[in-house]
Image 1 (tube, rainbow, N blue to C red):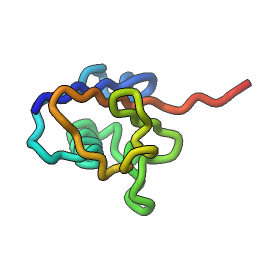
Image 2 (cartoon, rainbow, N blue to C red):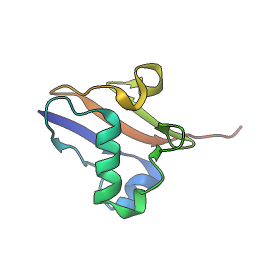
Image 3 (tube, rainbow, N blue to C red):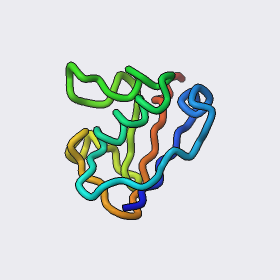
Image 4 (cartoon, rainbow, N blue to C red):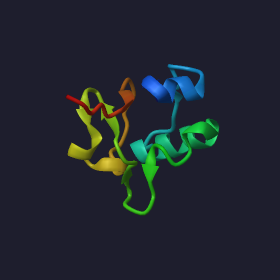
Length: 94
């Protein structure tokens, strides 16, 4: 199945690319996609997944079709053909 995945802000800068999606097996989860990205782009290692908490890391926001995955099934959220995943650092300030 084809999944579009885009990196934003410092994630894009550190990986050197914006579009990191591709072909995935049926049944792939958001967590598996994030772990694969961290393996493919070492600059992202430890910045996408908090293994101790089994959730996205720190201020990282991961959306699936514009919905925060933490409001779905978290890292266990299954992907489907044509999905769009966006990986964005949270922005704080005032």
